[in-house]
Length: 336
Image (cartoon, rainbow, N blue to C red; front, side, top):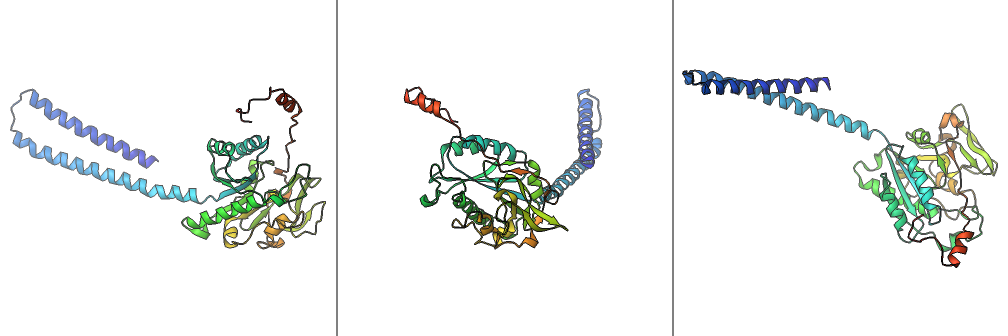
């Protein structure tokens, strides 16, 4: 920066000297002083030619300085792995509120690409407009859940796995898109599955950014417990602190792990099994990618909770229903 400033000052001085010299010659001519101009033209032309040469040399130095610095800046930028966050979402009263809360967190995370997959046969105007105004780097996809896999009204949330088709669609797009980019399978990055109703600390994303294979951490308020977590001894995960079927291959919540992009790209068949037994959805994806010994504990050796499995209460619309029955319901043109 200092060298560049010195070059600019030197260039300005040279230009000022040239203008002053030309002004002096012009002033002498205007004063009508008799002189043998042929005598002075030669030195003057030589001086101007020399100054132009000096100016050209300085400009070339400045140009070279800028071109050598630019690749360094690009190299630093590209060295930061991108976090690809896959989020399934579906239409409901609290959908926009959930997406708003989540996007406000993502705005604080650099180098993040949000892949939002709607459980819908088409992209809805609400999500389309929301993402367009979010200022985030995003990809908007859609994939409907098969009718026989959908939860029905009154079904408990654990009865059938949710978001399976949407996560798999996000993985499909990611594989196709990255392979079409320069560098292909060697690109640095991390893949994380973030449901739209959870709560995330910004610190969590920096914990996962340099994942080599699969990184893991605790998840709060899940499985009927204060938290579930991998138990770490000697820097290795040896078991899991969980209240339900700890013998599962990977008894973790979806929010409790991230996978390197390279690992996802090098295993094109890795996906979530919609037919997996209850609680085995995460294991169906991870089993072909990693062993327990290869897991990378994060968040202070899995002793810090940086993500919470929160759920928004379903709004009660009794008064709204009564008002609509009287023809006095809320204006449907107002997006909630």
